[in-house]
Amino acid sequence: MAGRANIPTNNSALIAVIADEDTVTGFLMAGVGNVDLRKKTNYLLVDNKTTVKQIEDAFKEFTAREDIAIVLISQYIANMIRFLVDSYNKPVPAILEIPSKDHPYDPAHDSVLSRVKYLFSSESVASERR
Image 1 (spheres, one colour):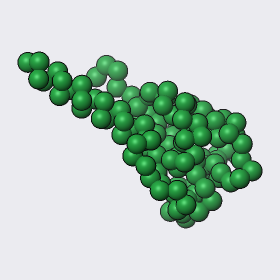
Image 2 (image 1 turned 60 degrees about the vertical axis):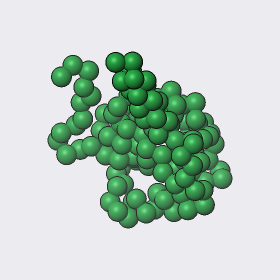
Image 3 (image 1 turned 45 degrees about the vertical axis):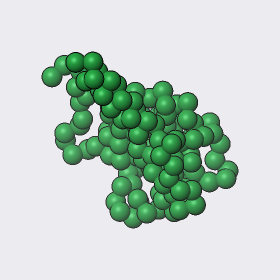
């Protein structure tokens, strides 16, 4: 099929995580962590010393890597780089915003949910015209 995204099929697709310490630790304990030969990890632990530039750089790096299929990012961190998250439009890696222990999930700020709502509202308008 034309325009379909290629997902690595050699069992090497990774999940990247950009989140607070508790969230990253939980995912690492679940086996999500990876360190490659260049000592690059597939996660960024964000604390009060982490700059927005570091978060932006990690997001850009994770979305450019071919071995990453999903980027999980805490929603409050995604809000810090909302312009990057909202402008990202590739299907792979998929960007999923997740809640954290200290910051509840707000569906009004979720870029994926807003895109889905937009698509369904466009389809309903198109089907009404028929």
